[in-house]
Image 1 (cartoon, rainbow, N blue to C red):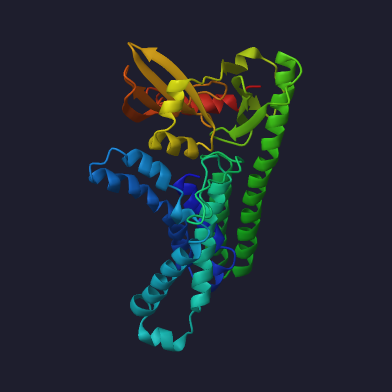
Image 2: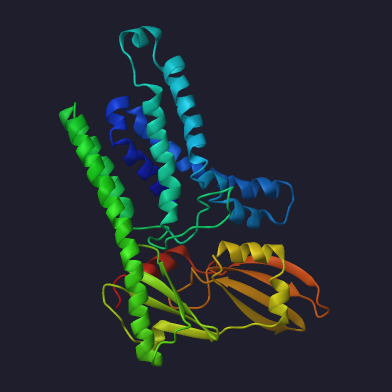
Length: 367
């Protein structure tokens, strides 16, 4: 999920009894702690400073890696909580204040930070990007494909929850019980939205199967389906179908049910030749295919004697029903069979951000 939403969720977890016991700084620390795992995005620039050409792939491989592991989360929380404890005791509260009032114990600070930090990989788990939840034991990427990276419904739920807590505190002063109820209500509502995304994931696949049957006849048993929520909400989905012979991508809006329009679906044959196999042996390509969760579509083109092999990340398309992805990795092989270049290509660079946002917003209202 986007970093702002991660911080908001961390702030909401502080309202579940920690802010009421610790004080106002709990909200700020929890928000910062929830964002901390995303500091791994600095890995790419750091590698780039060394002049390495693999900085981009290092960023892809490193992001949502060790810092997002549930095995490492307690260590991150312990470090942040210890710094917070020291700051409160040494710099914030004068000695006479500490003598008169016994502040919250270290356990409360640690619990607050632990809940906030743990919320980050767990929320990312619900997206399609993939999260290494058990690194370094395994590098497997876990993804539930339930909510998009940017969600126009989930994020406002968190904002309203925090705003309501703020208003009640300003209005009532001592409002621990009321804000506790609001915090838990907002947290449970936002969690319910995530679970609804899981349910609609299956609905989208079911609607896609019925559509395919109407368009192409009886569905083959060899089909593999995957559904990915599109930016904005859990109602519009990109459904990808793969058989041994074809790739098919289509747009499904679960609010309108199956719509058997050929224009919503795009198909292409599965390509496989010696040049694709050769490109697939490159470490960068293997890493990219791993990053996609093995949902990479290979294409081949002979351009002036050079062999151009491209692997498209089928989870994210320029359009929900198109086969061209937002990004891919491209290998260029010489006529003599030498791999000349391997680079990551971002196909959305030519599309204005406002245009893309408007396009995906429009999909919410189209059957």
